[in-house]
Amino acid sequence: MRILHTMLRVGNLDKSIAFYSEVLGMQLLRRKEYPDGQFTLAFVGYGPESREAVIELTYNWDTDKYDIGKGFGHIAIEVEDAYAACDRIRERGGNVVREAGPMKHGTTVIAFVEDPDGYKIELIQASSRDSGK
Image 1 (cartoon, helix red, strand yellow):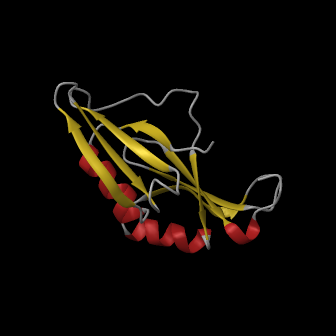
Image 2 (image 1 turned 135 degrees about the vertical axis):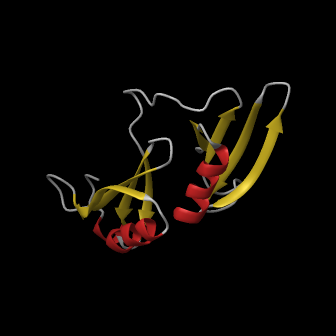
């Protein structure tokens, strides 16, 4: 078994694809419209779905905003340098909501960015990961 994807409902598919591809550097792997169901699916990721877990962006044609709710936390992405990643993301128009630095009660360097719908993405610096996080 392996994780295939995480699905996020988005209010503006083109804006979300631009964020994940242009700001976070993912690739649009596939996109398909389902006219009978009035929705479009787009899959983005850092590698092919046959080898990597990806993000499924679901756009329901009649909905332009979702409440994230209290149950969802974040998606985590490993980066070489969290400080430099925050700079690149900011330069590309992304929203850094927690600057890079050590996590509370640990040594792992993390940061958080927010996508256009308000979903949080945690950046975890590879060289600083400890066993607790």
